Image (cartoon, rainbow, N blue to C red; front, side, top):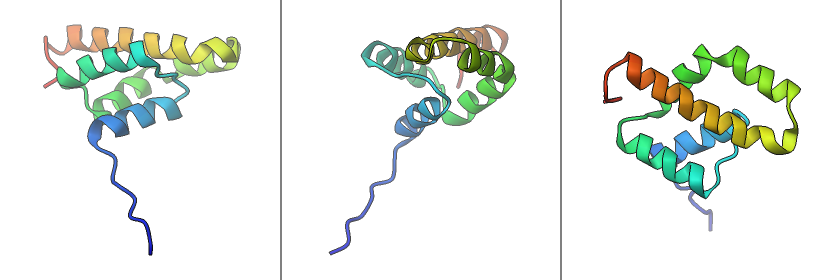
Length: 93
């Protein structure tokens, strides 16, 4: 019998995308990310934010300690989301 693979929901897609970008998502980051998701952060917005700051993320990935860079990138992403919110209104929705 063939197993069916469940489709990831939107929040899981967001987490998986950020992890593919080199971010480490632990419990604290997951809670913060869920809060931002509830405010309207969607995968397509995350893609746009990361694209806007690609050179910064690449710089961290290439020049910082690999054991710490994932958490640093995630926290940097949260800063960029906050900046995005400030520039695009109080809500992501």
